[in-house]
Length: 307
Figure (cartoon, helix red, strand yellow):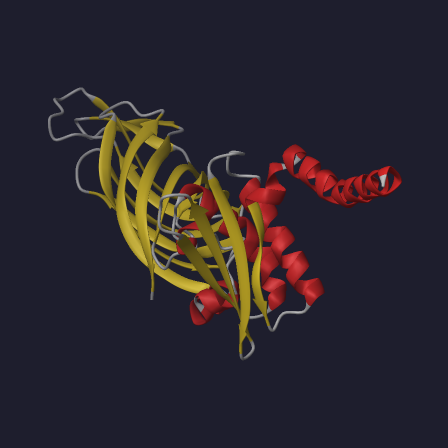
């Protein structure tokens, strides 16, 4: 009898070993309990395991361990589409769910980081988009148009000054732009003119290189421009000096563009125009007896939209 009791105890302890090891592993890695697979309909076991691993990894890398929530990843087929849903479960609160429609199972690799960000921050899935992480079903026509290139037009305001000028220091004006843009490059034309002195007006052929395909992308650019400018002012008195020029030249620019995954976007840009000729140095009596090199500089804020 004693031998039988000892044998039963040994067998019971052996049966508990895997469960104890699993519990220990769960205690060491909270992500095992925090995020797991739910229902998988029409998805192969291998694909489901990889998809859950990607999505759970993206979520648990962004949320705090032991935050009181657990996450369940469900997937199903609807024809050729894959529907992925993440449920956030928290005791005493209604479950929250986030669903994403994917053209195929491979798009989980693109969508997973965005799902993790959306779950961790509470943002809508659409708000996590950049031009480099769109999924095809999110906005198929517009996504394809962005990849192939799109025509944009718009305008805005600019402030300017003349480096090397002798008269009025600063001015402001309006700028209009047309641009053909792809994720990494843009090219177009722009025209601008001041609505107050000092005077500047001209047009340019523009090019720019984007250094990121994210929603907020820095860029550098340049091109050719024809610019006329003068820092003469209505308040000048006889004997006051100013510079005046109208010349073909080059320009260099830098700035960043925001909301690039949306139809409309915002650009902030600084430009320095480099005329190919020197400006005349004059006095208010209209005597221009000398020359000097002056550089118009502008900072513009423009709003662009698709045509």
